[in-house]
Amino acid sequence: MSDTFIKVEKLNFSYTDDDGHDVPVLRDLDLEIEGGSLVAVLGHNGSGKSTLAKLINLILTPTSGKITVDGLDITSSELTEDQLFENRKNVGMVFQNPDNQLVATIVEEDIAFGPENLGVSSDEIRKRVDDALKTVGMTEFARHSPHQLSGGQKQRVAIAGIIAMMPKCIIFDESTAMLDPSGRREVMDTIIRLNREYGITILHITHYMNEAAMCDRVIVLNDGKVELDGKPTEVFSNVKLLESIGLDVPQTVEVLNELKIEGVNIEIDKLSVDECADEIMKLFGENK
Amino acid sequence: MIKDITLGQFFPGNTVVHKLDPRMKIILTIAYIVSIFLAKNMWSFIAVVASALLLVIVSKISFKTILKSMKPLIFVLAFTTFFNLFWTTGDVLLISFWKINIYLEGVVFSVMMILRITSLLVGTTVLLTYTTSPIMLTDALERLLSPLRLIKLPVHEFSMMMTIALRFIPTLVEETDKIMSAQKARGADFESGSLMRRAKALIPILIPLFISAFRRADDLATAMECRCYRGGDGRTRMTKLKLALRDFGAIILMAAFITGIVFLNLTPCPISM
Image 1: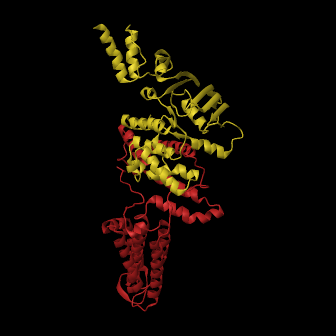
Image 2: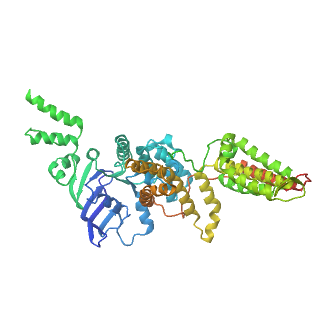
Image 3: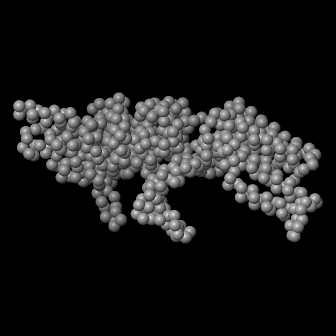
């Protein structure tokens, strides 16, 4: 569990804008992700979180720095094409828009796309597709066409398409951003189950603080650097800092923090509604 | 408004025609087209029409659907009939007034042409488009054409493009609807004015549609790369196509049919082309 799965050292990435200026996105970023962990990555727009995800998958190449994934230095100049695809197989990626990731006109054909590319045998593909459908709870939709599904269902199909490649790690690049609340819950439940039951390392890039609160570890990126890193309770206690870099805190923390500012003696690191309610009830207990 | 577009109309079913190997169906369709054009006299035409009817019955596609599919054909039929009827010359003059002469041969020729075109349409749609899913069709085409890879024809790429196009038609239709509503909400008027005006009114729909299509293409390309897509080499397929006994049966039947047509063409017949 404690082995480092992804190691990022002194990572820099910049792109050239229309005027020819270099725009730095990531600056000397250092990061370690343990195998089997469920990590949320937060940051406002332009903080470099999506860029980081694309660098780990080598969709983009870093300007400088080193990334090691599962013991393989993917930034090495001697990286062969087979190693590149091995890395892409190990680190799956689910994107924001569910519509733009589905290739085939039938759900199960789409899930088969990844393993087909890997050259897996027909019988094995069939088995993987059925298993992946079961894992995301979409078995009954196997023969449907993607446009008949809801956003949350489409996103689950996209996840199944990644699972069928049997990755060790899945990066969710704002995969819940375009979904309605029920779709978001569907996808979040699937993500957590993948981590808890199948031990897949998860990097969940998101805007939603309550989703981040469900993870084991929260990394806050700001201006291409790691601003905060730790357990959700620790990270969300820094209300002022988070607000100064344009991020919200979960509603529970916000309520408790407002109370604290008003002079109430209260702890603010309660992330679930129940814990928050208990904390407030404690006050009434003291007053009695 | 444009929700009910059904491209490559496919009616799922469980009949023998549905179950035939899609590769075989493509070959059979080509053979069928050839046989239709071989038909020369009344006997062989009766055989052709009967075979088309038989196909419809076996595939359990309703006659209503078939009739509906022939609607766009009316113009073509009327056009060919018009020319065949008035411009064919022969020995037996039926009607003659002013400058118009209609000969018996012209009537025979037009009737046979109508029969030929309708059975062609019925036969091919029933054999292919109505009973084969689009993905099966592109898949079968890729496999049938795969020998052409030897002369560096990008067969896999073509079939991938077809699949993606089919996948994105409903998505883009939905998007067009959305953009039209958005433009209408801003006061755009698509329904009135001259043809030119209405064509111009489409520009504010097409531009956002194209931009979004390009963006989608970009996203899709990234997603495909992430799923280890690197072209057709070394790719396996989930569905294996296997020829069954019925496929061989079908090809024997088709061979017999073509031989029959040739034979009937040679039999003396009062009416022939």
